[in-house]
Structure formats: C-alpha cells, structure tokens
Image (cartoon, rainbow, N blue to C red; front, side, top):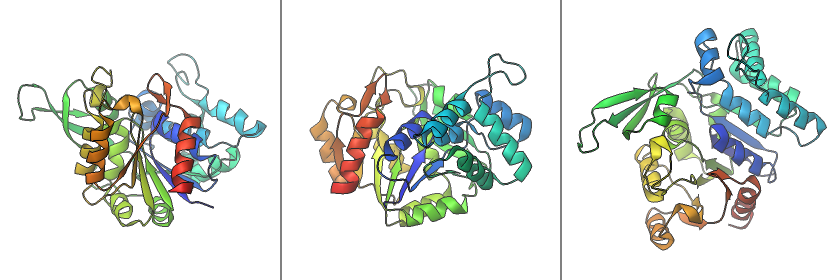
Length: 314
C-alpha cells in the first residue's frame, strides 16, 4: 500500500485529501496551524490552543465513506448560528479544543477524534505550537524597498500589497515528531494547493520539517493553485503572480527542495510550452491537466485521476 503524505491547509488540502482517499488508506495529512480568524481565532485567543479549523477540515475530508463517516463529517462541519457564545463556532472546533484541554496532547487528541470519526488516514499539525505568519510587504508598488509588515494569517491572505517575504512566529517552531516520521517514510508527498504565502509556504518555514522534506526519498508533487497566472484574480496575497513565479517563490523559501512533478490546470498558464521548458530547467515534469471544478476550486475526482496516473504509472 502506498504511503502518502499531504501538506497544506484549508479547502485546498481538503480537496487533495478527498482525491487521495481513492488511491490509498495510508494517508498522513500535515496541516498548517496559523489561522487567526473566525472560530479558530477565537478559540486560539480564549484557550491558547492550536487553531483547530484546518485540522477539522482535514479530518472531515478523511472520514470513512459510509453512513457513520458521512454523518460525522457533516456534524463536525456544522457551524452554530450567531456570533455570541458558541455562535460562529464549528462543532468540530469545539470538540478538538475540549480534547486538547483534557489530554494536553494535540497529537493524541487528533488520534482520538480520528478514531471516533473512523478517518482513513491520520491528521497531524505541522508544528506543536500555534503559529503566527508575518509578511514583509511593499506599501508602494513603485518602490523596491520593503516598507511595512502585515501580521496574521487573515491579514496576509487578504493583503493588497506585494509580499516580499514571509516568516513564522515564533521563529524556528518545533515540528511534530510524528510528522517528521511520516515524511521520512512516505512513498509520495504532495504540497498544495492553498493560499500560497499563508497555507503552503509556511510548511517550508519549520526547519526540522523542511530538512525532513529535503532528505526524504519520497517523490514529490506540487499542486498549483487555479488562480496562478490569472492577472485578474481577486486572490489577495498572490494576485498577479504567474504559475512560474509561484514555483520560484516556493523554492526561494526552500533551498534544496526538489519536486518531481508540478500539476497545473491549463487555465492557469497562457504559455504552457514556455512553462514546461522552465519547469524542466528546474528538474521537474509539468503535468498539464484539467483539474478545475470552476470558481477556482479543484475537482477532487479530476485531481484523483491525475494523481493516480502519476503515482501508478510514473
């Protein structure tokens, strides 16, 4: 059975996990833990816990495809109405917070939650502490000198300013041992899609995790965002970046990391042959396939077909 590790966060990672379920049951999701908005932000501020939202979404994506799993996947995604008390909170976020407060162990709590939900695979945080994303930005697009900072995942994801660099606070955060072990033992590793600076690149800013990725003998697949190369995309942090520039920025944050394949939807590039040549110079193969469900979301079934072809035929 193939051992797969998927890194990312939010809806992008959920789409990848849904796709991978049709390939194998040996899946480890490693999830960004820097969210500071909505229910996750409130629980983080009130209880000092790792933000649970992206972890909850990963668990829901890996729930068993039977009556029990489908019921629980729907239940943990349920969001209470209103904005006071439990209003605005997702049930799964409250359950994870309760487990963490009672066990004091994030990984154990996720295992207990996974057992209840009968998930196919495992969900782990990329770091053992809650993280904050901080970005250096150009406040004046006519100037090359960085002139400001934006702090927090929500602020970074929605900034209208050009991002020059990102970092995690605290610096050099501790990776989870279980995540490092999974990366070391994997046959294949996927990264993305997701908010480039606030969900994808943060995985490369945890030193021990990046070291494990570089050293791992697993073959690696980067799944490019559907808005890559869309100059008109209302994509905040990555607006106007070409698919090639997305890839270059990623590697700038991870010297020594090599990807074997990069999946790009045809809608994301106006010059596929130029992109293919550029990827080849970087030592990776461009996989140009329709993986879009429309509205800048990946279609899990289409993505599953492409990933199966890569995993089983390449």
